[in-house]
Image 1 (cartoon, rainbow, N blue to C red):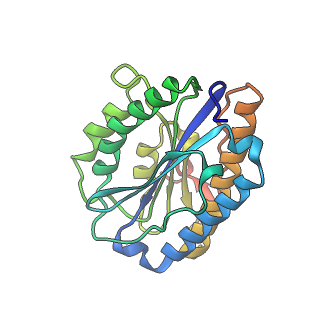
Image 2 (image 1 turned 135 degrees about the horizontal axis):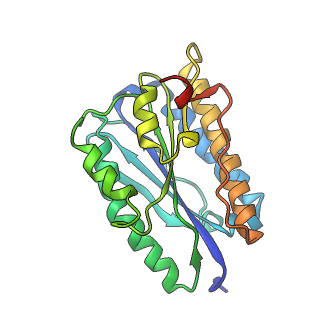
Amino acid sequence: MAETTGRVLPVYLVADESVSMTPVVDELNAGLQSLHDALLREPLAAAKVRFSIIGFSEDVIVHSALSDLRNESALPQLSVRAGTAYGVAFSLLVDRIPADVRALKREGFAVHRPAVFFLSDGQPTDPGEWEPVYAELTDRERTPTAPNIIACGIGEARAETILHVATRPEFAFVATPGVEVGFAIAEFCTALTRSVIRSGQAVGGDTAELVVERPDSFRMAVDVV
């Protein structure tokens, strides 16, 4: 029988699918499969999480809508396309997150403030355009369901940009210089898995706490700028 009560945490992975991700997209897909496997081994934590995968380049694709991963046999595969437009991702979230929260509440759930894990390996190709829609997404007066955004930068992503995207300084991370990008992707996925499981456990314990793990081999962006 489907759950009709309790508290859940919506989690969105927003991943860069620009061409520069081509050498490491397989590592990212493998990391997401590992996340899925880990959640299946932690059913009590998984029950408290709803997960969505969104990819962005010059456009945005919802690879998987917000769902209970215990009911999914496999996760979709990310791919690559041209462009790194941040704005298309934030624009989609402005509409999608409130709609998802309303749907969960109709099912009888209390909904913890959503979390977005944002990963990019480059600078936005839409400077001056993404900032206004980002401001709308994160303004809790205009968007009461405004998410916490955890931002991770690898490759050519600059620390100051990642710090701008994260909603709190302690949610902004950049890979340590010299770390191989594929390795950084693996570390990101491991930290994402730990964060989702620990947050699910916290919500299951009624503390409703978002737990954010810093990926190994990453630094706080605020310490770099």
